[in-house]
Length: 165
Image (tube, rainbow, N blue to C red):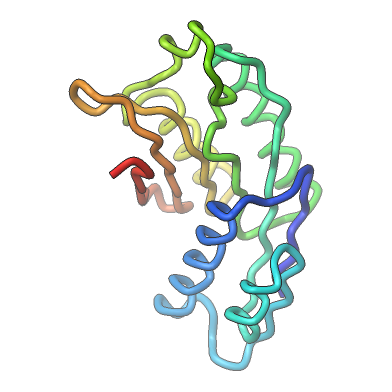
């Protein structure tokens, strides 16, 4: 069974990511044929994942503009809370977990190294909580900033998706 524990409405990025996680779990044998999944977040995922089992918690924190360190602490706290309260297989944070995306001069300080604090936090939480954790942030790649979404597995394996490519 998939159960989504929401603090806000899901966007399409999380829907697609959740479906990808479910499909990957099926491919790797974590989910077996005949298992049942009930998705409460989006009827398109419900149809696509009708026979798979996975518990997903989605966290939508109230973030402060440009306050990367404070927002990361808040996200880590909410991920731990979701883990304790719901024992999910997957916990997903928003694609902009380090700061809301808006036109504001303080956002010039928001992009982080792709392997910096946001990446390390997601990877650390996945290992600590023994579940898959995902979240997105503005990352620096060479001269450019990109929206990067990181999905970390409990064994430390990470998967990155750059929205802007």
